[in-house]
Length: 414
Picture 1 (spheres, rainbow, N blue to C red):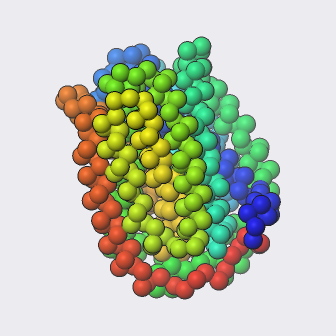
Picture 2 (cartoon, rainbow, N blue to C red):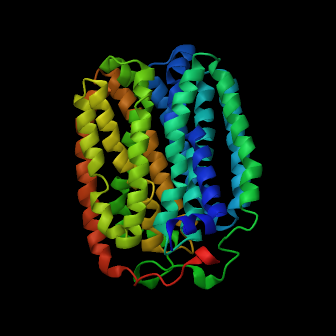
């Protein structure tokens, strides 16, 4: 199928997934961290205190995701997505009105469980179910929402922050979330869902089985993949979370550093499409061993960067890994554990990633308070990624012989 024909024939579902991934931005670290400086100043928070608040709220959302993620196995994306978007809007209003530092924990929890947690989960799980033979291609298109959010929203909101009170910007974010609800419902008026197609359209996983979550957590492959799930979430989040601090240490203005994000996005978009194409051709097992290498290189480069040019190159390399991460992990769970119970299975993976995004800011903020600046932490972070890549390689090589033959089902024409 030609690419343009693929986009045209599947436009409603691809657009719905894109919309969900884009609106998840308001609960993502790269957006929340835009306001780190003003929040710390208003509530007199140190780096460690702000990081601790973020860790507590995000960790609580990771625990909640274990149960909330199961809802994607029971409800259509159209129904559940509309509800969660409204809840995300309420979370944005909660941030706009937050009275003190203790309430920030609850605010972070609501933003993270709705935005980073459920909205992202819906976008990826829905797409992985709607497509099988062209899953990689579809995930690459849908993941453009994450990329567009990372490229556009920080630049726009940092600029607006100089013109408007920070609380007013969160009211604006709430309005944007609410405006997405009718559009999502309209796009998915004829939704492909597990309930709307025959039982035979579910793809099986390893050993020809439809895996359930209790079997997933008992299997060695899941635990070998945990460091890979945790790493990009923990340390990629820490990088964006500490962007104000990093710019100060390097001697750059915040606006100058944020202006590098479009370079990161260009490489992320390129990597997303290339990895989506490669995924359909090669499968996740052949690609996962190389997934973390850009993270190793980028953190080493950024730790030594003295100029914005060098930082820009590092962010571009990071974009290669983040772009691949938009497609590979989501397809990995569907390919290895099947799609019948994909919502509950990926909820476990999502919980691990959300937990990682809680750990990164907390640890990095604590170390900064101890006098270890974030650029100095990056060498240890790179070593972590090497360790995780080794475990992932062992896991996928052992799992290779357990996978079923090529998928015979494709619901793209359902």
